[in-house]
Length: 203
Ligand SMILES: [Zn+2]
Ligand SMILES: [Zn+2]
Image (tube, rainbow, N blue to C red; front, side, top):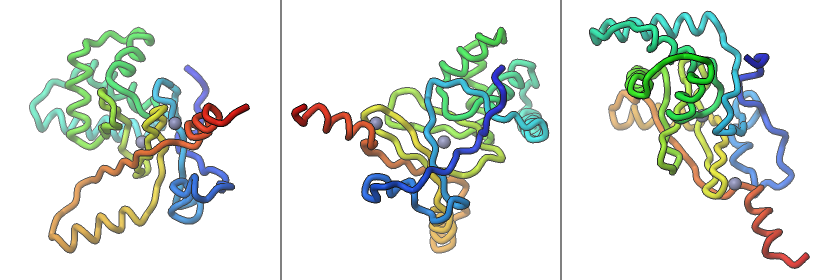
């Protein structure tokens, strides 16, 4: 296991090209906004806060009991694996990560445990315009949205409190108790645009 690294997305320095990276600066101060790159294939270990993990386990236990499901070791091992990861991952990456660590679980158990965790809001599920759904832990982690590059499929997270404001306002206006939201912005990242420009311009 690698040494723990900061799990929270870090603030980026102000961009020198406002038109390019406006999305990373919205939200004002670095306290209210952030952006961070996630390498989808990285099984990097985030800080595994033991208290938080215990809380999550308790919630999961209550959910399993409510549904009359068995509290198997495999299900908890999957939950722990997820909360030990940082960033986004798909089912295959999760399955491979567990296998690497010598944890025996069936694919079917991984799939149905993920479904249970998503249903309960302990894990969020995203479709970033590719075939396989991406997941990430969500309990106790900061609410954020995503910008996705359609060329290299890089996913950048950002946080803007105005989005939460819109959610609250729309809920009040339309008399909805809003549970969650999903906001993905798609575009071509600076790196990909630079590469394309380099290809087309004469040396
Ligand atoms: Zn890109
Ligand atoms: Zn995310």
